[in-house]
Image 1 (tube, rainbow, N blue to C red):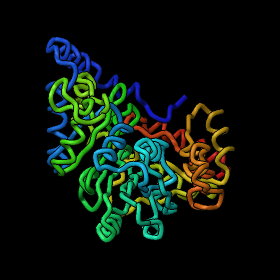
Image 2 (image 1 turned 60 degrees about the horizontal axis):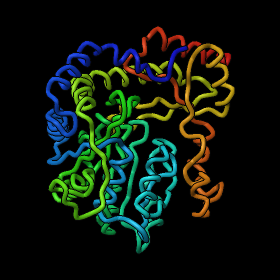
Image 3 (image 1 turned 45 degrees about the vertical axis):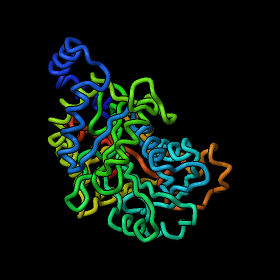
Image 4 (image 1 turned 45 degrees about the horizontal axis):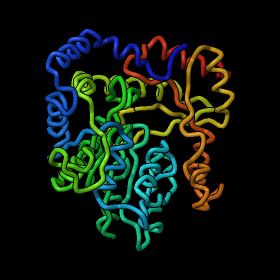
Amino acid sequence: MIPLVHLQRQFQSIKADIVREMENVITNGRYILGPKVAELEEKIAHRLGVSEVVSVANGTDALVLTLEAYGIGAGDEVITTPFTFFATAEAISRVGATPVFVDINPDTYNIDVSKIEERITAITKAILPVHLFGQPADMDEINQIARKHGLRVIEDACQAFGAAYKERPVGSLADAACFSFFPTKNLGTMGDGGMITTSDGELAARIRKLRHHGSTKKYYHDSIGSNSRLDELHAAILLLCLQKIDSWNEKRRELAERYHQKLHNLSFLHIAPAERDRTHIYHLFCVESSRRDEAIKWLTRHQIQSGVYYPCPLHLQEVYSNLSYKPGDFPVTERMSERLLALPMSPFLLEGEQDYIIETLRRFGGE
């Protein structure tokens, strides 16, 4: 079976380095918030051009702690997309606020900026755009709307490390940004991890306190916080992967271009073009098809794994039934939930394997 993501090949490629770094961490004896965490935070701050980086236990915590540090909670609303992984809306709910959904742009699958202002109310506190599948959202327009209405903007960049918008790196485009280091992400570790980036020193200080039980002095607490810290072992692995991320992302882009060239003329598929003013890093490579379920069965029969992102939009999830959304409220989102299909994508996908995937799709369509 050709997997959706070649994780085993990825970590095997740096296995010797990982083992060496793990031995160094064991010898050092610092396992929580140690020198590797500090080095990772410093290097990512330099790379993104931000002054503050705070590592946490996972991407969901990054979102929750950022919202909490901004004082967003019960009685507040946060605008976001219904077409993303559940954690985006879950984080809003976790702090007691209400997610307010806006439909997506059919060409980018990101939040449709032309529909944001009509959803803003007196209790809206922030906009939380997602850089879905590795392509940045329309950040200039989003920031302009936020400034007009006095709102915070928090990037959900969990799928987009290394992406850029008008030559500016994702993670530096708003008041704050949140990353996930889940193993399947472009920059991932062998477990969970997350990070918040910002140039707001006061915000970063609040998040650092919240990630450590609401404490800045050992055994003294002036707020209720969390236990959300990045392990030193994961930081060591991420530092190794950080050295490779540009070449890995470039390989993803090369494979995406081959998919575009060789699949664009298939009548049963539609491939949305990447926006020209941004660098898409293809966390996932998705195509649209009205014959998606048939295609999945065909690919599986031919030993090719595929994926559906996302089969149930957030506004139709049972947990949000109290928000009174109904089918038809966000037609683009709902159409994509029925049509989008993710094909194998990884810097370790061999071109021969990709050619087999392409040929298998051609045979499915009889083309």
